[in-house]
Length: 276
Image (cartoon, rainbow, N blue to C red):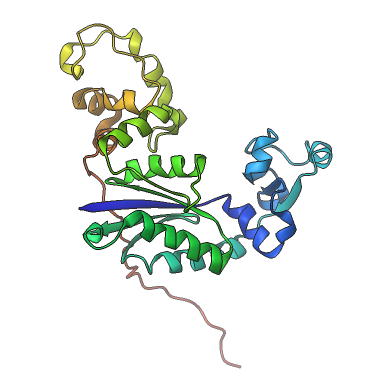
């Protein structure tokens, strides 16, 4: 069977600074954008204090000082170097890896469950990344990429003593995870499309747009599970083929695979200084 893992570095920017400044551990940390304009990353402790993303720094200096918030400027070369180290370790655990962002990657496992306990396998990866880089990571395991995203959020919210790994390997766990996940937190939905789903109960739909629901008003969609109860025809009409793929993925039907980086075959020309 094929499984996907979504690996996410916890509070990556703040965690990177904590590797070299260990006294920052357990303290609220925010990282600022270019020219120290606004907050682009917050540690868990900073979020608990109510610090919002994109807060303007110079308007909140006194507030941050009163809350004993540690403030750091961005250093993207620094973050990129640490990201390379983390991804290099993860690539030892499977040859199928897609680097999704500086702090996230998808791993693909085909046939591994016949020889390994995948949860234990990825718990070892969590431990090795932490030991070798100092960066804590969370892992979500599931049969599709979209469900791996859901599993990762659960792993972050409910850390386990054996490693921050959550494996959605039964339909009961899939349903439980989807009911726990709010619709605006679904990968590919976000807040941009949530407003459409929140008003669906006011729209009259034919029975062909529903799955096992009487031809009354469409139910209000507030969770990922509610989204999976909509019909494929309706989802494709409202959210195009991209939404239809997501709809399948959340129901456990694989519609997305790893995206491979294509080689750059372009030729470049650069001027050199003339001889003297």
